[in-house]
Amino acid sequence: MRGGIAGGHGRAAARAACALLASALFLHAGEAGAEVWVKDYAAFRGADGTVWAAGAVRNTEELPAVATVEVAARGAAPGGGDLRWAFEHRAVPPGGELPFKFALPLPPRLEGPRPGTVEVSVAGHAPASGAAPPVRVVYDKSMRVHPDGHATGTVVNDGEVAAEGIRILAVAHGRGHEVLDVAASPGPLPAVGPGESAAFAVYPDPSVGPRVWYYSCFAITDDSVITLNARRDGGPFPIRYDSGLLVSYPRFSEDGRSLLLHVNPGWPMQTSLNLEFPKYSDAERFEVLLGGERVDSLQSVDEAGNWHVAFAVEDQYSGTLELAGFDPGAPAPLGGAVPGWVRDAAGEWSRGLAGDEEFLAAVRFLAAEGALDAPRDAGGGDAVPGWARIPAGWWSQGLLSDAEFLAAAQYLLSSGAMRIAAPAG
Image (cartoon, rainbow, N blue to C red; front, side, top):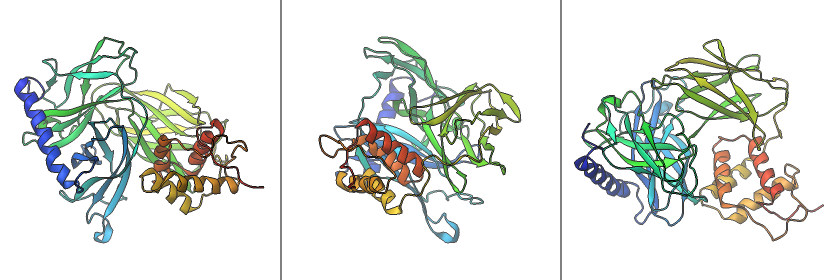
């Protein structure tokens, strides 16, 4: 056992370090009295060369909150300018914290920010709905940090229903209490029934593994989706995936029939990938090739009309992933550009900087232009669910295409979850 999460002294050290870093970074976050802030963070280059920002967000509000985390790299742009990225974090539970880890999409041939030049903060937050899984981490002698830096432990379900698809996150620290990384379980845990317990493991980036001394701020989440952007027919083509692996550099082949990605080496265990992306045509039938070799896969479509392709990836595979079978002649779903001011309005609303009426005014404009079909009998007046801030924020950051946002907005209108006055005429 290593000094850290195993044993009373190690647990006390972890809690003390969490409290110390929380108070110090509360001041760094700037605004006294802030209710949602970045508690703890680090930026580093991983074993595969990817630059990461990792840490935790603290929420002292009475409701879950979805935070927009802003990462700034001072002087990292060509010519000495700053690079900035914004990411939508998962819902942080009330009175708790939730780790985050974001890959910084650097421009080609840019080596990345210098040490000490990265700043991470909460640019805004919005209330969220839903409850956390009824599962807790057990702090006892079953928790261990292993020589390679990964940790193992136990969770127990205190609820009345089975918990499925959950993952464990934790902040990894070095001997000086410095943040090294956010470790995660390599895949969802098996279903944990009421009163049952289950073993888990979390793995940090291999580049920092041997330096991990202890873990803190364990959290349980059922959302581990990562978003990438490729270009298709001159427009953005968003790809989301759920995996313990890191996938990068998405691009289409010259003939437009294959999506090419790079799979980075992971830990020594079999895992799986579940890719989600827009459906252009019902005729698209996909074949997955890893290193040129075909692998078995499952293809399905979800209720939002997006394709899903799932398949297994063998132990420590690293190399090319090709997804063949795209229809290069198919038009983009719900094609057509949306004015920039509408996207800006959605972004302001998603960060809590504009009220519901400003966002609904933008939706009314889209309906008046024929991009959305608003039911004539809205009933009950204008309304918009608070959780719609999440896709609105993703869209404003380019993580969703215009077509995907319009499809999501149309679903809300058609289901009655969002209501607007029908356009005249």
